[in-house]
Image (cartoon, rainbow, N blue to C red; front, top):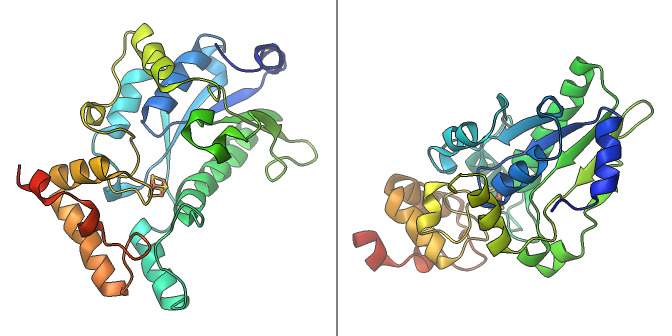
Length: 253
Ligand code: SF4
């Protein structure tokens, strides 16, 4: 089930720690299930990048309920809203909101805090070998399909520290992912009853179905996004407001 299994077994033998980047979504959950069937529990370390009020409530409890290790929660020093405001103020010539081609939200709020955690945690444990594991899958997009599922992380590696990027379920389909979760006797996060993907409640790449569900569940957060569009003078989706992508009927329901 896991990609590159022989290489992964040799990493385990060498005492590598597998840092499981867990968003609470189905792909993270399935990745954890797959890894926990191969790697010793003591070599798995679960990390969640907390995005504060813009993430679904209950996500961290869901991660805790479906993993065996202590949950490590990391946070960036700024929030998503801080980031949009800062960009509107300092770069008035370009859109203030992140987009699929300029995803500072992922790099600044998730990837960088997790990388910092890995560096510090490796030092604390006194280990020199680690894998940063993410639930990225080829099926999600052509650019994700082109990614190498196992490769050295040159930014995190240096003399005396070897860190690999690993996408253990890169090859799995959505159906496989749900099957894997079920096979562990688990359920995916409750929002999947209506959502297609789990991300921020209002993701810059969210589909109309998921955005509308978010607006129904979190009307105050929906309003905060609309207020931020007003304040910055930029719409959330390149020329289109969040309001235009949410089905008002669904909110009233
Ligand atoms: S879920 Fe969407 S909005 Fe949130 S950090 Fe990721 S890309 Fe950005």
